[in-house]
Image 1 (tube, rainbow, N blue to C red):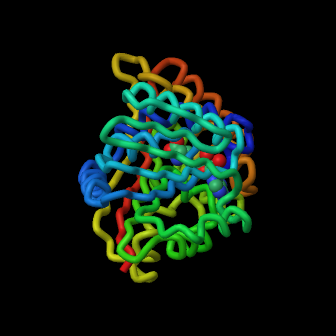
Image 2 (cartoon, rainbow, N blue to C red):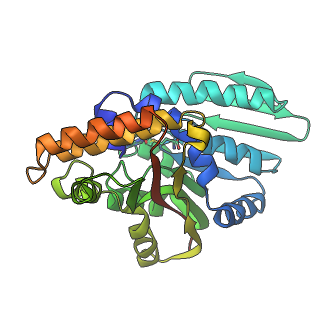
Image 3 (tube, rainbow, N blue to C red):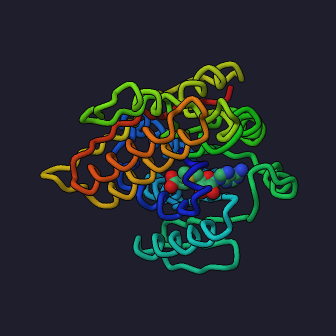
Length: 303
Ligand SMILES: C[S@@+](CC[C@H](N)C(=O)[O-])C[C@H]1O[C@@H](n2cnc3c(N)ncnc32)[C@H](O)[C@@H]1O
């Protein structure tokens, strides 16, 4: 639902609100396999695409034990990239590294380890950025909650081009269809229709909300061997009537996305939709609405 959230100008708030839910939702086996591949590389050079909150970068730093790690974080949103740079600096500092930073880089050293994180500016499809990345044989490429926001085919082509032979691609939290809200809304038919709307159909989101499922076949079609696949479904329930952390912001952002999606479809009755949105928003305010959203993680090796 990222494109609609972006259009509403609250992308940063939404990304922040997702972090804890995303962290809890990961498929642990796919993650463990990714971590073990990462630890098996002597001096890994990793590219994280759509770094946003820098949460994937934090995982890479935490999970890698190599003497030297180099990470490239890219994001089309300059403010988010700046923020990712600042947060990476804090992360290294709090992990006991002696840190230094420049315009587009932060680095940390300890007697036995060094980590360098580069933040070259630009969109993934920016020619200049690609030229600068193409000379690097990446051992791994990662993405977290990225593939719903971009045209999948061209993005995967770039993954295939930038990744070294034998390198891994670890992509988490890819929207894979079903979103459920409980308890049921009075007019179940209306809610089912709203939940089933696929923005991809009208081109608002390049590939709709089902990118996670498609990645499996598309990667195998590109000659990758899938080494891990599992669900990272969001599960939000207001325990004792209260949402944890930023969950309320997250659920509200999703409701707004669905409402806006409904407005864009002539087949949906606007008055009924407005009543649905008002009722669902109120039930969030009262701590009554639960949400589940299907997401998938995939780990694949380039042959
Ligand atoms: C939903 S956010 C996820 C951010 C981060 N990976 C996380 O898990 O918190 C998607 C990110 O992809 C970035 N993005 C979208 N299109 C992009 C593109 N063409 N090139 C680079 N980054 C892009 C957005 O700016 C945003 O930060």
